[in-house]
Image (cartoon, rainbow over all chains, first blue to last red; front, side, top):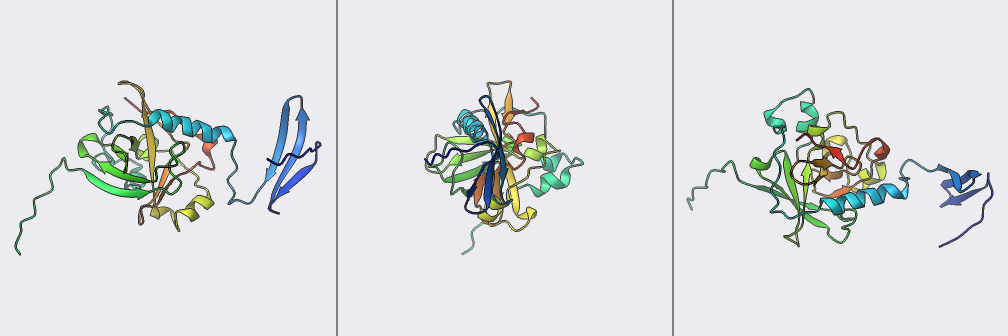
Length: 90
Length: 139
């Protein structure tokens, strides 16, 4: 891992197009400004961990009995959102 | 040859293969899935790991449970999936069953499917902060 020391107001540049600036340091909190092109996803790492944990909780056996939802399938229950649900069918 | 094809019956399961080159977060090594639909289990469907019959995810069309859902799919992911317009994409969101009386759906990280090719990816939405990984389902 590359480790750099930066002062408040200083930046680093990644790949000539991603700018990361230390905006402010307050105690143990560092405020970071990120400028990146729209094709570069930027997320807190916790988002990935949260989804990963959710997936690990969700994985199950195909033999599991599924609950009945008080929702009929989209085709049988047209709603104002019918277009969206119909279009989403694979 | 003159064979008579049997009529499809209502309980017939429908299967489609989905290829996920980056896997599902936490299950990166599993890349091939079968999407299985059984009319008796609607609106749920199954995403079964193709090479491991014991593992599966329950999935649902998110718009059935969250009509206001407006997922912002990052352009980089759309490119990876070969999606040129929104009509080519479909969403499957993973359901977690918490015992018999509670189920939730992950709206933060939907599985985006290219309906034409079956190429799929679990995507972290650009607007992930607006949605929960445990959005409750009506029971």
